[in-house]
Length: 244
Image 1 (tube, rainbow, N blue to C red):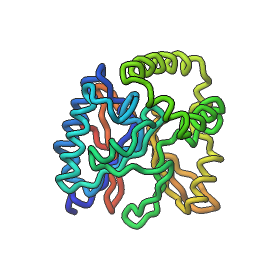
Image 2 (spheres, rainbow, N blue to C red):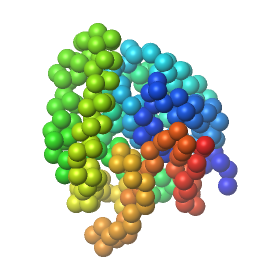
Image 3 (cartoon, rainbow, N blue to C red):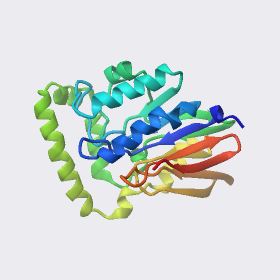
């Protein structure tokens, strides 16, 4: 089977200035394996933080240029924003050529209607986060943040990442995982028996019954310095491919 028939999925790279190995893995992916794909889907948290499309500090500008080169080579690239980089906007899309997706996206994956999402909306037990998410997605909140000078936004992002790190350590881990009832509800709403998402950093394949029909939830791997993984889907099935 031709490799041009493969569709690649990845998420939770959390690219930042400090994570040089992950940046290197991603650039290598864009310049090699991604060129063999029919389409590439990045399901959120490509960046560890995103303070606005005007931020061209390293490595953002290089990432933008490499994404644009991939799109110019004829590869379709789709992007969900995540809970860390939800301020990615239309300027980023224009600069890179990627297609931004909404919270949920249904695709035809070799004949199977498949639901894609970052995954944070599925963690409905984390009420505090869901309240923040709702507020931070409003136009008023985002305009208020983006109106600040870039240096101040970068400083605020660094503080937020530190706060988030310590906040997570004090949370019940189960609260930060998906709620199965929410999973089933959104799959019914979108008419899908297959769901692919990231966010939880708990890579696995979950098989279950949805209204007495077989259903599957595939969780993508978060990237680390020593492990950069994509989900490769072809007509005859899928496999996880380690790029390191």
